[in-house]
Picture: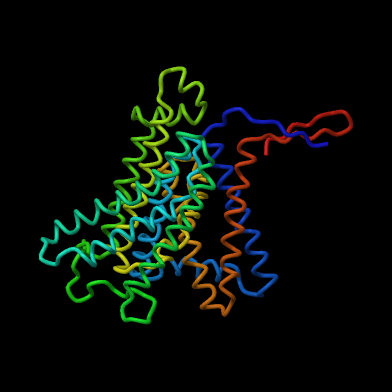
Length: 360
C-alpha cells in the first residue's frame, strides 16, 4: 500500500536535485521515444535541438529575444499570482499595449522629435495595458467577481479589437495586414543598440531585477504576499485589500503593455491579432513552474524557448512533423511539473504491516 504525506520544508539543494533528476529522466524517455519511433540517433536529435537555438549568431540573438519577451510577460502576471488573483489576461493586455503603440506610430505627426514619439508611444502602451487589467480588477475588488473568466473574456475582446483595426489600417488594401509601419522613415521605431534584440534583452534584465526586489523587499511586495495567504489576515492587520488588488492588477497590465510596445516599436514594426503568439498563456505555466520567483523564471523561459527553437530544426533536418519536436518539449515540461509532486509530498510504502519509508 502506498501512503502519500505532505513534506515539510526541504532544502534548496534537494529541490534542485529533484528538478535535475526529472530533466534527466525526461531526456532518457525522449531518447527511447526517438529511437523507437524514428530510428534516429537520439544524440543527433539533441545536437540538432542545440543548433536550433545556438547554431548561428542570428539564432542565438533570436533565442535571447524570444526568451526576454516570454520572461517579461511571466513577470507581468507574477504579482497577481502571488496574491492568488488568477490573471489570465496577459495576452489581451499585451495586445492592448501593441494596438496603442501602432496607433501612435501611425497617427502622431511625423514632425515630432523621435524621443518625444517614443516617450508618448511608451506611455500610451503602458496605460492601455494597465487599463485593460484595471477593468477586471475593479470588478474583482468591488464585487469579488471571478477574475479568471473576466480576464479570459478580455483577451477575446482585445483580439477582435486588434483584428478590427488591422482591417481598417490594412496596407495595401485587401491584404488584411498592416504591413511594416513607416518602413522608409522608421518613424516611431526604437533605436537599435548593436542590434534590435539587445535592447529588448536589456529591458528584460532590468525588469527581472526590479521585480525580484519589488516582490521580495518592498512594502507592496509584502502586502501582496499577505493578501495571497489570507485576505482576512490582511484586513485584520490593516491592509486595504481592495487597493492591493487594484494596484497589483494594474501593475501586471502595465508591464504587459510595455511588452506590447516592444513588440511593435522594437521588433515587428507592425500589428496583428497574433503578435503576442500565445505567450500570455505560456507565461502562466512559466510563473507557476518557477514558484513566482523572477530569477528562476529566467531559466524556465530559456528552457522553453530552447525547446521551441529546437523543435523547428528537428522537423527541418530529419523530415519529421513539427509536432514531433513539440511532443518532446511537452514530455520534458511534464516531468519538470511532475517533479513538484515529489518536492512537496513523500511516498511511504507499507508491506505486510511493516512500513518502509522512501523519500522519492
